[in-house]
Image (cartoon, helix red, strand yellow):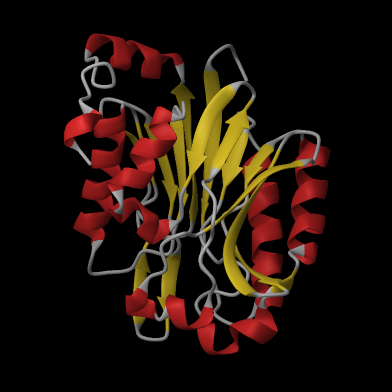
Length: 266
């Protein structure tokens, strides 16, 4: 990290529903690709439910028991390559059921945060197979407070605002967001950036699962709502540099948070 600047890499990848071995193998290869070559990233993120995809009928058998296999891979990689990982999200099996959970790792390989998806998406029957999370996704990247939400969560602006009020300057969003709702994806992410004057960094999957097509279009959006980088519909690693100091500049120029009148919002 250079002062307030962060090099970010998003692994936009295909996910094979129900094939955890193939997905782990693919992610390992993509992680090594992300740290190879020119500018080394400070932060790498990947999509939602990358270990199993939406094989929800078999999710109890496929889910990572207490996240052990995921932890082993991500902790070792972040430590070896001195990089922060926003670990997409996985199907994580606990004693009380399966959760859609994201893990966060620092450069030393320590798990510093986790977040389980609060809003379960009924259109894909998540509520029938998954447990809802019970805490906010709050983390810190080398002194910068940040927030973490998963896919459907972005349709709930109250959640993003709560994270912003708690100090978040970056919002990370792993997702499996399908056609035909590309316009919703772009519009909602841009709105969350503008209204909260924060960076929004969103990593979507690509490919087809059953009859559902996923369009990718991973995005990095600045606090003005300007798109810094956007991927297409193919597997790729989207890279960009962000300057976190821009958040304070934007919040000073348009003092939205100072002008709030929350007594009217309840």
